[in-house]
Image 1 (cartoon, rainbow, N blue to C red):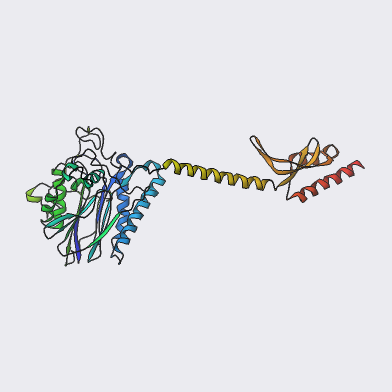
Image 2: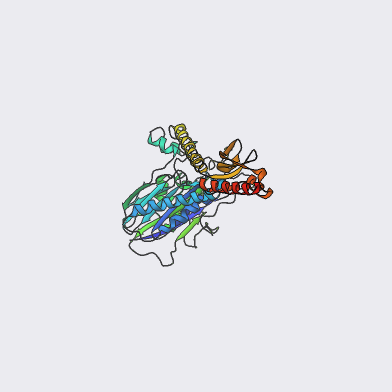
Length: 415
């Protein structure tokens, strides 16, 4: 079996930048929705998609292993970006990945982008949101309808951020001819009802459905970026001119809905609706602002899990380890220094010192070990100055040999 696919991404009515990224190819469908507002969610999503798109080749038997590995590599790549530029700390992205091997689909998911399956006239949600409101739904505290207008509907609990290394949800299911797989950012599924999405998915070609899902989301009042990927399972190979599609922030030239109201002049809006691009945001509207909402939900979207219990104990153990390590290093350094010797001067006499000829503030690294009866007054000015500056020795025997040489010189000078 083969995939016939289409992908569309639109910046939407409110936001100036598209933080969604998407990719559709013969083997791979993926949507990543960047989180972070000012800390470049667009960079996180595009980085993740660029890493994930390497999956777009015929998979081996370990379908889920390949998906999991690609998600972890995307997370590692985001970690590298944050390490290179600490100003990006806090950026993250959702990731919904669907890998096709010709007979089955493998899915990896983290965050609140979604994957749906439309089969034989019925649609079901494949992925489970990692969000605060989804946890309330799971507990029976609110309904799905209430979740659409909940004040904290934007808070996600898991994302790829290069720091927490969350594990994605992984599962697979068999493919059937006629199946339609729909992958989208929350700009679509957070606005459209399941019935409306099913109505559109059951109409026209994948390209028509993708365009209409974006248009319907914006028409329904979505204030977020909207990215939709639709793929249909078919027995016939797709047209040869169907190339992989890269959309949103990850695309060099993002695919946008043309002002003419059609894609390639072939597809028109659902039931004659307009598919024109939404006009730009007025200059006096701050980025991401909603009417009556002074805070950009995108900037507050990622709600990391609270710190684990006994955080103070872990910090104390780390501090104790570091102090112990420092003590070991200092002890090793002191032990080495006390095996060193040099020749110097104390009160006009030649003396063998144990330690190194250096001092730290408030700490002497050497002490007089053997005092000889060789007086600097009985040596030449050059020899006396050499002793005062300190003479390194390989070991104690070498230091004693140096003193004996000066003693012999002293005796010659005395005769």
